[in-house]
Length: 542
Image 1 (cartoon, rainbow, N blue to C red):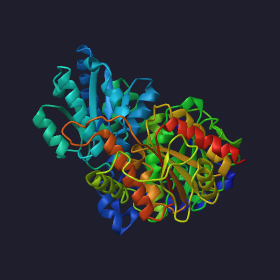
Image 2: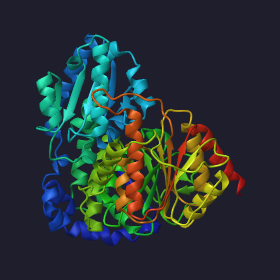
Image 3: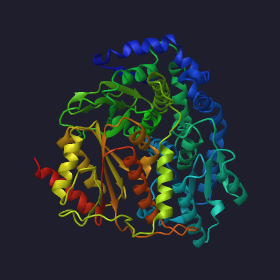
Image 4: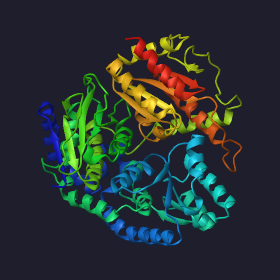
C-alpha cells in the first residue's frame, strides 16, 4: 500500500462531506480539468491551474535532460548545487533532497549572512539553479545578481553555471536565453505551490542527485486512487476530515515520525495555508518535530495530523494520538495532499488557486524600500529594558511596555485568547538565534496554550503569509528583526540585502496593521541575546 489515510472516530462528521464529494464526482472532475468546481468567480483561474494533475508525460521528457546536465556538470567537477527560490520554488526541492539523502544548498532568505555564506562556498564546484515562476521575484532576482557577480570575480563564465527554471515567456526566460544560460521551462498551467512534481521541484532535486524516477512512480502508483470518485479515495478522506474540524479546529499540528523526517510539513504549510487562507477563512498547518513540547494539552483550535512513511505509524503530540494519520511514500503524499487541498477549497467555497494577499506584502515592501531614507532599522522606537538592546517598533493599540518582562507578558496575555501565535523572525535561520528561537516557540506554546507558528522572513511571506493576512482574524503576531545586519550589496542596485530584508519586514507588519492584526515588533541589536531574554522573562511570569 503506497498510501493510507486514517481518521479518528472523533471526526465522524467527515462522513457527510465525504459522501457529498463522491456524489458530486469531485475527484474525477479535478483530473478532467473541470474549472467550474470552485464557482464562477474562480473558473478563469482554475482553468489555467490544473496542469499538476498530469505530470507524468512532461516528466518523461524532463528527467533525461536533468540527468544529462547533472552528468555534464559532474564531469566538469561541479557537484555543489545551490537553489535560489522562494515559496513553491524552494520548499518542494528541499523536501525531495532530504528524502533522497542528497545535499542541496537552498537560499530562500534575503538576510545578508545567509547569502554571504552561500557565496563563500567553493564556486569552482558550484552550479546555481535560479527558480522563479513569474521571473520577477525580487528575492530571487537579487540572488541571481549576487551569483553572477561572484562567478565573474572568480573567473567563471556565469552562463555556464547558472540554470534557470521559469515559466515560458517570462522576463527571466527571455533574458536568460539571450545571455546563454540553460533554461528549463515549467508548465505555465501549474501554480507555484502545486508545482512539486514539475520542473520547479524536479530540476534542482535531480541535479543534486535525487532519484526522480522513483519519486514520480510513487505518485503515479496512487494516481488512480486519488482520482476515483469513491469513499476510499485517500485524498477525499483527508480533505473531509480537515473540513469536519472547521472553523473551530483550523490549525493542523503536523508531526513527522522518524520514518518520514523529510520536512514534508513545511511544504504542506505553504500548500494548504496559501490555498485556503482568504476571505476570512483558512487552514493553518504548523510543522512540528516529533516529540516537540509544543503543547501542555492540545488546544481546541488544533487537529493533530501524523505523517509517516509507507508502513509507518503517526507520531503523537502531547501524548495524544493523531486525529488524522497519513502514511505513504513521498511522491504519493505530495499528489494526495495536492488533490486534498483542491478538494478542501471546494468544500470551503473558496478559490484554492489564487493568493490575493501575497502581492500586498510585496507592494508594501517595495514601497518601504523606495521610501526608506532612515537608518537601517527605519523606525524610531523606545529601547526595551532588559532585552539586550532591542527596541520596540510596534505594539497593538493601547499596549504600552517599557521592559522585556512587560513586553512578553503582553504577548502572552494576547495569545491566550487567540487561535494561534505567529512568531515571525526576519533573522538568520542558521544564526546563533536559531536554537533559542525554537526554545522560545516551545515555551510560548506551553505558557499560552496556543499553537505557535515559527516563520523565517521573508520566506514565510511566500507561504503562510497569505493566511496571516487573508485568513481568520484570530492570530497574534510577534515579529523580530535585526537592527544592524552586516551590509551586503546587491550588484546592479543602490540597495543591499540588509536594506531589502528590513523593508520586507516593515512592509509585512504594515499590511498586518492595516488588516487590524495585533503586531508586537522589536528590533534586536543582538538577536540571540534578545531571544534568550524573552524566554527568561516568560519563565519569570510563571
